Image 1 (cartoon, rainbow, N blue to C red):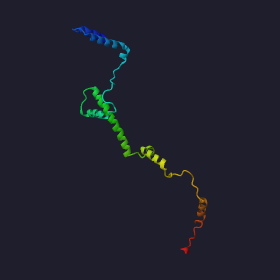
Image 2 (tube, helix red, strand yellow; image 1 turned 60 degrees about the horizontal axis):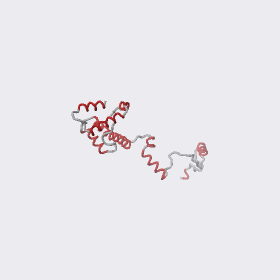
Image 3 (spheres, rainbow, N blue to C red; image 1 turned 135 degrees about the horizontal axis):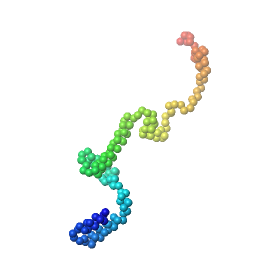
Image 4 (cartoon, rainbow, N blue to C red; image 1 turned 120 degrees about the vertical axis):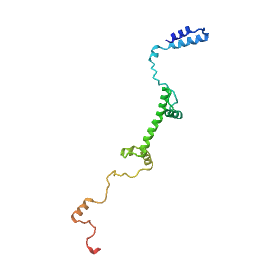
Length: 171
């Protein structure tokens, strides 16, 4: 179709072309004809081309995000760029709110206590300094007292062995 448009344009022109113009037109038709027709049909033009500031350019994206609220968009491309820039700050704000909310009022679950970000610091500190003794016993404790014998003595005599007498003379 492009060749036909060029030919029609050539015929409709009243003055003759300069040699440079003819050569540039021929070069343009040659470039277009090299591309396979299947590739031209397969291109979908979805509008995913890059326009506007890079995602790492925070000040430019902030300006576009502010324009979303202050200036109406004149084209779809401008509106899309405003939304992309706003999405960057909306994501950061949502994540920041969730983190601050969990820090301000953490859940009371034992899983949260074990896997919270603050537990990492306690783990490193305990690895370097050492931890306090465990709350529950890790092994059986051996005592010198014979508990079954003392219990039998209390049941039969109602007194501890070597505990003294109940007489009032000693007081």
